[in-house]
Structures are given as structure tokens and as C-alpha cells.
Image (tube, rainbow over all chains, first blue to last red; front, top):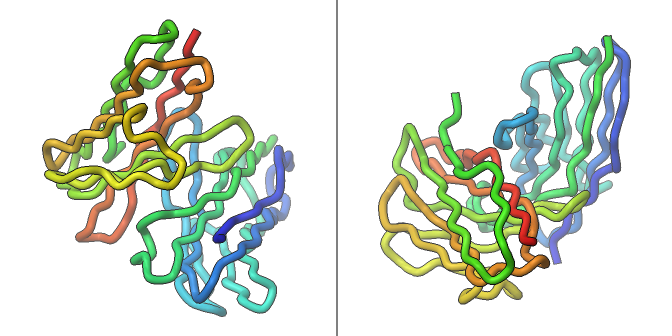
Length: 115
Length: 115
């Protein structure tokens, strides 16, 4: 069945460091891929998405590229800030689900950025 | 600000009692809402899809009689955990689908502890 695997946290970085959070998936067909972020005490927010192979999603300095050959959607940011401290979830929307329905989530990766 | 309100944020109850969790869309009408459950250090697991004016669609392995879902209006879905037991202790998260924007907005979650 469909599944998402992301790297375990916590990830602890100093401000302005480079960030990579790995995400790989298992799915049939051509799923849509998402990154959500959850700040303390808030709900999950859509950070970025990609709906087909080689698409690059980007938002707020974060980027992720849909790599079908490696079934990956790694999240990157060139220079993190303290305000980026949050939990990041990789998610998959199965093909034919409309993209946003029936999302399958990874376990989440907690990022802590220190000044 | 939040577009989906989930209440309560935390509840502690005795074994055998029932607990109701509310999920409200604040800025849009949501004909479809979703209920997820998250165990510590694990993925969000979709429990059911709540459709306004009709019966919820439950995922395989989720007990319909244990987790009652009511979506009686375009802005409110409720999840009732009936005869709760310690194994029902978990983090429950709702989301509402804004079909106009094709975006799923999430509540902040409810932490249920059954003693």
C-alpha cells in the first residue's frame, strides 16, 4: 500500500545553517506530494506541494523536488531561522484522490533552530 | 488566524465515559472534513471522511460504533469517542476541505487521555 517515510528527528541546527529533511514514498501511479508544517499550538499548514514528476514546490525559502526515479521529496532550505522551528510532515495524496483528499502522512520531523 | 477551530485542545476522562470533539470551519463552508489520529512518534492516520448530510466513510480497521462522526452542518463536524478506554488515548486532528481553493485546513488537535 501507499506509505511515506521521513527522517526521524529532532533536527537541531544553528541559525543560517542548511536544512535537509528526507522524505521517501511508496505509491502506485503518480501521487501528489506535500510538505506541511505545524508550529507550536497550531494546526498543520500546507508549506508546499508538487503534483507531477520533476515539479519543484517552493515557499518561504523552502524547496522540494518530486523525484520519481528515487521516489523522494526531500525538503531543503538554504538558511534556516529560529522562526522555522516546528514539526514538518511529508504527505502523499494518492493518484485519483484529487490531491488533497485522503492524505497519507509521514511521522513528522521536529526542527529546532538555535540563535 | 486559524481557519479551522478544534475543541477541546485537551481532555482527560475516566474509562467508560464518552468524549465529544468539535471541528469547525471558520471562514468557509466545508462539505468534507477529515478525522485523523496520531500516536506518539507515528504518522497521522486517517480515521474517516466526514461528509455533510450523509454518513461518514471510515477507513479499514476503524470501529464505526466506537468513533461516531456527525457532520450536521456545513461548518461543524463532531467526533464522539464512545465508552473510551485507555487504548483510545491519542492525539486526534481534524481537517476541513475548502473545495474552492482545493486546500485542506487543519485544526490544532485534541489530546485525549483516558484514565
